[in-house]
Amino acid sequence: MNVRNTAPAPPDRRTTVVVITHNRRAELLHTLRRLRALPERPEVVVTDNASTDGTAEAVLRHFPDVVLLRPGRNLGAVGRNLALPRIRTPYVAFCDDDTWWEPGSLRRAADLLDERPLLAAVTARILVEPFGTEDPVVRELKESPLTGPDWLPGPALGSFLAAATVMRTDAFRAAGGFHPGLWFGGEEELLATDLQRQGWWLSYAEDLTVHHKASVLRDSRARRILGLRNTLWFTWLRRPLVPALMRTAHLMATVPRDLASARAFAHAAAGLPWVLRQRDPVPPEIEDRLTALERARRSSSARSYVG
Image (cartoon, rainbow, N blue to C red; front, side, top):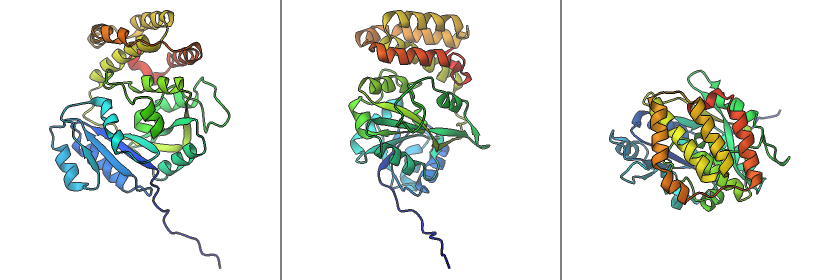
């Protein structure tokens, strides 16, 4: 008689999960419960970006095994960089306080990265809860216009989604992490571009899954302002002159003509001095990828916040 082996899979210690949060105590505690239940049993690092709702105290009380970082101010996406000195694993999985990884996905992501030394990051399929429907951005990932080597586990990507990505720790560290100037909102594009300049590849992986239950505390208007501002800043930090001018003109012509757009352009203009000081346009082969991505995203409903 055949007896099926039903023993649980052993823990997988190749990946550390890094979560950033700000004033979302209930959502964060839900996410941490999900992460603690993963069969991989990853170490979890939480950066509390100066919450005032008792988030840090709740983490200490309910999850004493979690590494809690408290910078004392809201660092935005740079809160992920703060975790770097604490990471001893070859891979880091990013997670927001309203997202969580499906059991087995971290193990599979580590396998994909183990097998492909030039692959910097894999981005997962995103299911929107409570109904488990695919996020509209998934179609954009699946239909990426970029080509890459045939050893990639899925379509080549020009950027990634931090809440749904596992990244090689050494690549994250070598690229300098998330740029402090962008703070938050589309901050991945600059890091992704700098990774590609260093010779790394990014890929979508269909068999990885992240669940997202959007926080009720989300400020959609503020996110649109930051997203548009950071798109403009990225454009002038990395795009050559003519494409930068064309991209700026296109955004000016297509974004909603409202107060949020006006504020985004005003904030972008105010930051131009530091942006131009740090300007470092990409070489032609990377610009060709950015052009292809820009063309494809113009018809993407998932990118409507940037025009």
